[in-house]
Image: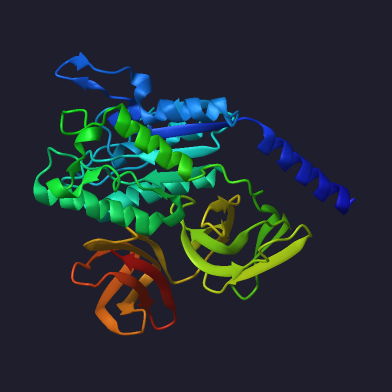
Length: 413
């Protein structure tokens, strides 16, 4: 029976992969197909890279649909999930041109491409931009969509300092998202004119590209090979059990693992904002039943939502279902830290079931304390730490009371 079950799963995966796929694109006017100059439409909308890409993949029989959810004027906050509440002074998610709409198609797109080249980048911080793009990508990955992030693009009508910032944003996106980033900057930028658009690719309005520039973007996406042929990890029998000593034991099994790297175990107090609490390496390649387990030694007071994130060799993620275990009488927990990666300010939400004195430390990767403060926590408390003077890199947040020491890592950009 087990052999038949595994064979059925393999056959099902093969049939699914043989079906024509779908792409969704969220972004701004370049992805939409803007070719107007002084009120005159210079080229048809299907000269845009998104339409060129659609024609290429349809002719190859790879896709049957490309959903273009781009809209003029949109920036990264517009693409956030509809449930997201932005900071003051920032744009709200713009349904139906955001990740929420992309996730509602049935069947779901196989691939999401996120392309916000320049809008609002004159005043948004790099940390904000990365936070938005990472949230969008994680949302897509959570429902099984591959997600690629395009970099920023050059723009003529920005100041010299702002054009340099666009290049820095591009470099940061390439660094943070690695194989899931698409370079839309380097080939379009003219280094001899202060990173303006190369004349042969410019529409003439200081912002947009002509069809030749869109052809460059199309080729960049094709070169990325956005439809990898690997079969995803098949995870089954995920369960969570509270133990008599107050810990929570998680157990899950897999029947297929191809090009897999490791599992991340994540926990949340609200079922929405998750943080990693551990990692377990997996086999890499297997088609036999394998069992894994992890123990949460310090669960949160109240609700503990758990999920398993399967990470493959290319850092693509798959998310399991969420399970909830409720714990009472735990004294303290870190509810969430954000943004992560952080630019200038790190926000921390702490919760305690009774009034508790805690020491909050930030340590470097080699254990040096770079921040320390004592605070009283009762119920829910939010604190903000100025991290602007910290060097870029990985840091450890440690919250210590008489009975507990809780830790979480974060990245400083």
